[in-house]
Image 1 (tube, one colour):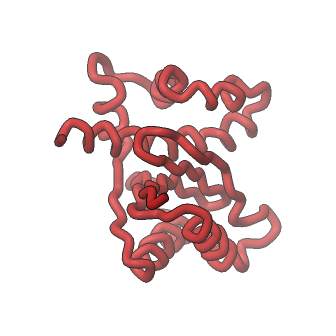
Image 2: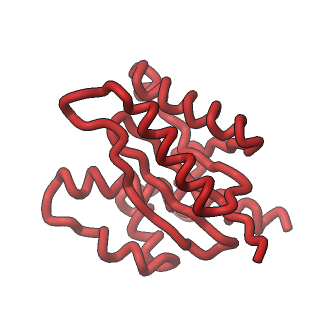
Length: 166
């Protein structure tokens, strides 16, 4: 079976939202911790390990990432993480496509300008397996799983634009 998988990533300084799609089917979701609060050492090594494991487990053919905002670009740590994803991907011969927050909102919310939370709610209709991560009781849990929802949103937007071209 030679299936092509799309890896969608929502990068953060401490967490990495990951979603893997096979066609339009969501086959894997996770939030990976790349740095603990006490030490930012080895976060790039840890991320390399995560990416390598995903590359081995799935036959990744393309990487789609959520682009970081102008505000997030002020963080040198986050810039290094995003650049590291690009480097690891190109070393594997994989194309990296960035999806902006504006693209997510315009593609998933055609009629109105919605908040990020509303966009995530709309994803639940297409991907009911996400319901267990929605409406968490604590703010830290909501922030944590926002990476997961962002990764799924990035992948969904890419798949929507791909299907519109065909």
